[in-house]
Length: 227
Image (cartoon, rainbow, N blue to C red):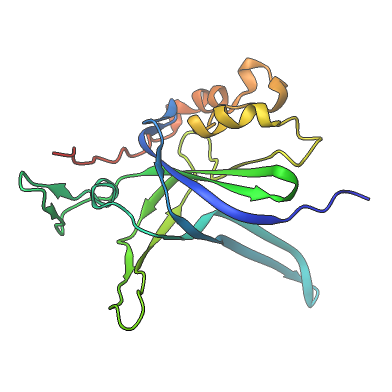
């Protein structure tokens, strides 16, 4: 009988802004850690089709192409919100949101602590955020903490179609160990190949290059620079 594993904590949410996503590759800035994670909720976005014949269902297809994600945080810095939403910060330090602003694309990752001192690591490689929800309360007879809630939509990369990367140190058969944690968290693993088993011409990058001539280049998100 296998060991019992349970999730007991979520922490170290990080964001890596996407600088390019095309058939040639996906590149990112260095990840930014956003401390104070309270909760992460993921709802898969599923396209469903059913084939009927002879008065009954004969086949069912379910295709996941990303998640609708809610992150509850102690506090999301205004500067980070500005970068994600395409807002500007003027010379007086005032964040200015405008109807013409375009949100930035980014990868979002986090760490889940498991029982037995193991961890589960996740990256969603392409996301966009909606304006954050804020729960603001007054202080009465006791101190009331106010928190932020961020709604994020994840989607597949144009580069290779990936929408999720997950690693788990509790799975002894996966080949992923605690020695691999730092590398996984420091860079979004868009080109990682399990056990290096695939030849160079069979990697997602190589396959996408072969059809680059007939595939439209993925749109690149323009973001305002912090002032």
